[in-house]
Length: 178
Image (cartoon, rainbow, N blue to C red; front, side, top):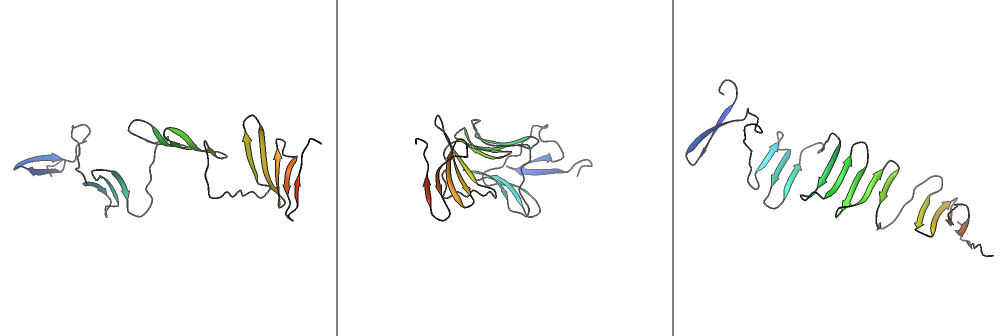
């Protein structure tokens, strides 16, 4: 300690050089450089580690609690070439991209998906009458409705049945050509 800051010295090739950790490294032109597998560690038990293993880079949280990434407006993940992979917007949407194209976005009413959804199953949970909407460009909108234990397919107006499977197994087909 020199009276105003801690001064450490290092010995490299039999040359001893002092350096100070009390200075702002950004303004004194000094970088902290770590070799492969050397870690910047934080916490009494090295709970947070930042390192590069020669092939991959890591931010590793192995302590208690949650790893939190915080930003004043948005949190953005992007490739080195600038291609956006994910955006989490303050008080708004989370957007996930595939190869530079937005594929999934949360909204105030749920989620919007661009492209095809492949799933092992679909559960529509609605205490009133679950409705699945299927829209074909240039043809119209079809609705599949479960109402009172009956399954119906309806077109455009939601009131006219084209097909109905009742809970007792009866099947009804409807057509409007007479």
